Image 1 (cartoon, rainbow, N blue to C red):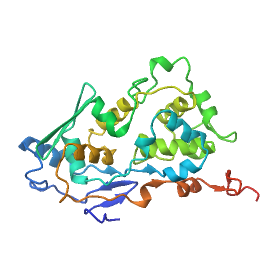
Image 2: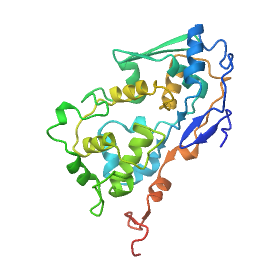
Image 3: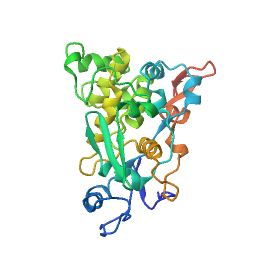
Image 4: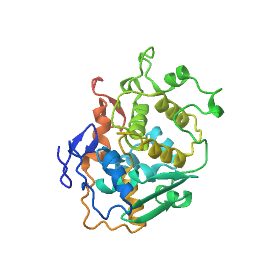
Length: 290
C-alpha cells in the first residue's frame, strides 16, 4: 500500500521506499552538513524500512482490568507505549544515519542541527526509567540462578501448550498474549517473526511477571543502536519526531506519515487473538460455549 504522504510500499508493518537504484542526489542537499554524511545516507540508510509506531489505546486498557497492563504501569512504561505522533521518513533515516551513542547519550544531526540527547533529555518525553538491570537481549548474570526457560514457559503458556519445540504466541495464556504483543509491537518492535516468542521476549515477560526491574531507557537506546546494522528496520520513528521538535528542526514542509487507526492496539487486536468479551466483562475463547 502506498503512503498518503510519501511514495513507498507497506509490508509486514514497515514503511519502505520504492527504489532500485540510488541516484547521487536522492537526499536534499541541505539535509546534511557534510558530503560524507550524504554519501552514508544514500548508500546505507535510504533503503532501510521504518517500523510502524504502534501505540496502546489507553481508553480501552483503562476500562479493562488486565494484570498484564498493570505490569507495564508498574514499570513506568505507559507514557512510552501510548505515544502517538506522526513521523517523517526521510528525517528518521537521516537521524539514524548520523546516529552515535556515547556514554548513554544519543548524538545525531539533521539539517545541520546537532542533537545531543542525554539521559535527562531522553527521560523527559519517554518517562523511561534508568533504574534496574541494563538488559541487552540476553540473560543477565544477576538473573541466571533464578531464570530457566522451562519455568518461564510454564508461567506464560496455557496448560495445553506444546512447549517441546519453538514457542509460538498462540501457545501463550490470554494476558501473556497481550503482553507479548505489546512487547514486539511497541516496546521492542520488530517487523518479522511476530508470532514467535524469542528467548528475549520470554525473559522480558518473566521480568514483568516476577516484578524485576530493567533499565528501559538503556534497552531502547540499545535497540536503536542495533538498528544501525545493514538493512535493519528502524524503530521508534515517533520518538525521533519528539527529538526533532525539541531541537526545532524545521518540519513544516517535510513529507510525513500521519497517525493511523491501524497503529492503535485495542479491542480489535485482542479480539484477533480469538477471544470475545462477555457481558460480565470477562474475555473468553470465541469457540467457548455461550
